Length: 358
Image (cartoon, rainbow, N blue to C red; front, top):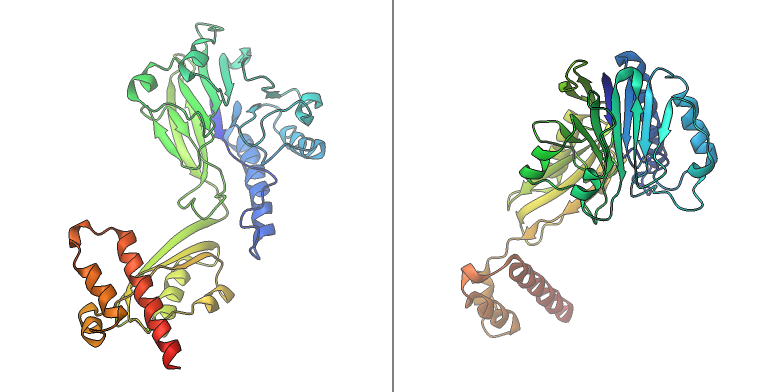
């Protein structure tokens, strides 16, 4: 039995809503899911397992019709979908009154199972259980002792899937197709998997995104093959540059342009500047946004003050007193917050002095 496992598609979402490429990203989510459906044909998938959050919010009837039209193009594939945290079913959900094609099974209750006789496979489905995962799983009666048994489950932030080894090793399933996590994870000897979303949905989600293709042994029902297939149109790339006293704005702009040029314009960038710069140096990097898609541009560099020289220069005023009181503290007991407070204080006092002189 061949299957494709995906989750957290978030159809209808607009990532980076305030950015010029926002509409493109919304369409890329749709295109990636259409590609998953076409993969079902190419791969010869018996099942398409959608582990929650297919929709970014409660779907409209026209959205259900649009997706059902896609599912009708793969009549030989059993499509099994269940709600997740973002599209969980309510009393007014359009899902309750919508009739999908014959090859689509949708979980409308908190739990349920689907058995497909021709491929001897049982899908045990759980949608964001609120209580114990162990109890919810034990509640499933075994439909057929000779069938392959797959857990299809979506998780919530309030009740994440347990990850202790004893629980994972005791799961009575040949494969656990999970959803509800923004991070791709493989557990329990690669038979318990969070695929993450097929498209990255926020700048935090760097790395490759895609789907899992698996195959169960027709005789034993055991997991024979499993591979991750990257399919995302876009990728968020974090770039971090450390500056020092010698770094100038022109050189920093050139370095960042070169590094983004190596990755290409189809990437979306998160830029973080760290290190210690000259106190009088500032970096104006907004011109980079005109040439590259940049979702975040954070300048976390700090002024590299010569505290000894400042103390001598301001030996009899508030600035000198402020620095000396800080330096008297045990260096090993200082936190990052303390260091940040010192720099902010020095900057404010120096600025106040300049204002008075001006």
